[in-house]
Image (cartoon, rainbow, N blue to C red):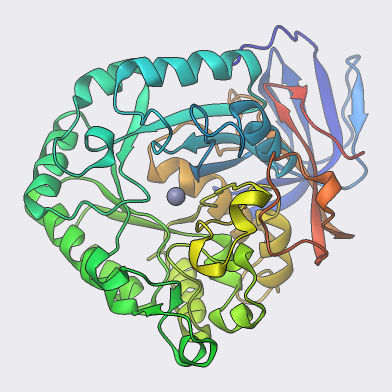
Length: 433
Ligand SMILES: [Zn+2]
């Protein structure tokens, strides 16, 4: 964990303070001391001899928390590193990320957990938490030593990118994870039904001549894993939900009291399969972009709480990786640097989603989902904060990306709302100002 030696004390004044727990945005000021929020003044002028930083009416919120990030290090440093991935996170308003286990070597041994934590302490631009692998080398055969992985610092378990095909192995994994109180993040995909698939099975896939995978491939897997969570009483978190049917299954499971949570990604909430008309490889992702009805179901799932939070599934790939025929391009879309702006532009209309609703889904909700600290605007909390101009209009330029990769279909897109930078333990971490 990063320990800033910054001992500065100052007030941030002139802010619109976003409190995601209370669901309100109100004018106020924050006193930062020793890297923590030591005072909140909701209104009125601050009477203090300490320095004051007037931020001129911008929104100040707890920093965003991404519970699904691929940092790619160790093993795929040509795509992303801990340093560049966390720089991208900070640029996107994130003060914490949870990185996935499908590195090389896979995070299935405490030494890899330690390596990532130690490297992060040296180079990271935000807090880094670690998801360790459920099974040895993500092969879905032998479960890992969860107590050792937890002792080393892992906060969750997942074979993300791969479905645990053998239900007996998944049951054992859930049972053992429960003993060590680690949530299991499920990548839900019936791999027999998705074999060779390049996009969602739909009118578009027929038109484009690309092999599709039906929504049922995801729903069969969600149904099984939710049932196993019910059987074992273990905490199951469903990654990147993309279909209306999966939302329905999770809703029913929650009603029955099954300990299941779920996330949706910015791309599944905003992009649909008709956009593949361009054969843009940067739109190839797993699970694939679905249709408009699925997008609507995901959005209402978020509104009613069936989907707990938004997670990016930031999946960087090099240009060379993606500069091949559509069939051979690896699936994945970057998300850290565009999530807030994309969602603020597409979702926040003041009716279905307000700005503070979006902030809640990026802060306190992901923190609660994986039982992580942070996401709160309260006295005593670490001063991990994001500064936002919700009205700034800007265009995403490739040259401005902090990530090592640029595989996003959003280059050249005009957004409304821009992250200005983050304070990490009270230290200004990144800036466009
Ligand atoms: Zn992923």
